[in-house]
Image 1 (spheres, rainbow, N blue to C red):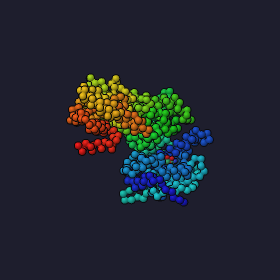
Image 2 (cartoon, protein in one colour; image 1 turned 30 degrees about the horizontal axis):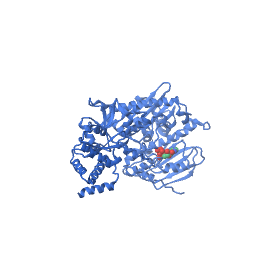
Image 3 (tube, rainbow, N blue to C red; image 1 turned 180 degrees about the vertical axis):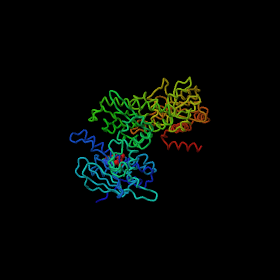
Image 4 (cartoon, rainbow, N blue to C red; image 1 turned 90 degrees about the vertical axis):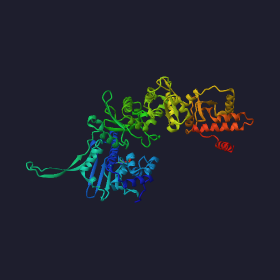
Length: 623
Ligand code: ADP
């Protein structure tokens, strides 16, 4: 039999598991049980919707079996099973997550990190087992197969005998050592405790033979005890959402989040909904504390798990979540939904829209509360998902801006922390008509812009925009409570419209002529202190927007209308004047070009002709 190799990333992950000193390695059981439950979900749904499959509720269960002599723990399920190809594909690679990100994460991450962030699914078995055998018979196939591996050296697959459809996972526990003891995973009471802790709300019975003791018949008066075994269901099976909120605590919800594979972080908030009426349903919703590795990629699929009266009918029902809340995870269960709901009819399904609207409203309320009552937590949320909200304001031509604008925060120059538009307005000066903003890559950079000090000196607060999408968001929102947004550059150039002598005006016009289309105007300013030049703009397109638009996959050749502003109080301005009056204007042209390019550098724009620019600098040095 040929040994097959694991994919490269899987090998690294496996090695990590095998050598794991992760203290929570007991979570391997949760991972295997969740997989088993998913597999049963799939076949259960088939049975319920396909007339050719007989439906017998008792047929669906998970079983644990510990064999102390062989030191094996077996997790069996009556789920959909895996074909030869599925065994090879699903267990030979890290399922779906074999992505770039995961690869680098494995390389960089500490063990705790990776287990915490991604969970590790099936591979977690190797934290406790030196050898793993998977025997599986897929639904609809006659032949069963045995997958077997002793770790990163590879795996084998061969035919085997197995009567029923489903999967048995047999873990050969690692040998005990001085520091580590794996026997706990053979103790029925320990296993029972793990199931209650991690997998209590799995919807199918998790069974195990338990040894119990009872008084022998006829010895009730002076009891003599005997032991017997009894098939016991270890989990409560009542799904969490059917429980009464008052009976549950935070830990229950957090465990449920993990059990459902919503994420491996601790959720930032959860909420439990129970609605009675025209449409009755229950829902549990979570806001994660960090985006999943693929959240900001096009592969990310939003949606909530949808159950019809306890049966999973769709893992990700996207109709239940608006795009702007795509990060929300959770489940919805309704008695009023039919099992045979299909994607096509679902789209127009009034029932789902009703539920979706209520869910949207609920999430919105929860986030508002968080913003009001727990700022620190809200900022964690904003750090994770603020970008999503901003893109959503910008998308669909700003259709959702009214719903979302109060969730946005930006760095305030005065407060030196994130504030909302509302907070900006509240502390505005009486005479102030605009909400001022400035753009740049970092807060420190913006802080040093000449335009920023001009507006700061007037006592106005400024919002600092450091993400590319920010300025587009501002354009889309347009105004907030009657106050319009104004860039500090515009404000600065409004103020710097100064009377200049006829002579100076001639000089400025000559500079503009020399620079051609690069600028729409050259003018002096007295607002600058030590700085010599900067670029302001007129019109709708700012310099940062120009940068963003030109960096798009299909660059749009859009230019901001730039105004070169020169500090008229600076010594250099006098030199410029001298050069202008000279017969030979080559120095004047040289200075003009250098000044313009300096202004570009300050704005973070590339130098258009670096060779010429450095040649110009050289000429200056030679003087
Ligand atoms: P994940 O569960 O995150 O997809 P795993 O590594 O745990 O990742 O599992 C990989 C895949 O193997 C699963 O997506 C599923 O298709 C398959 N699988 C695992 N366990 C079982 C099982 N008990 N029955 C059927 N398929 C399974």
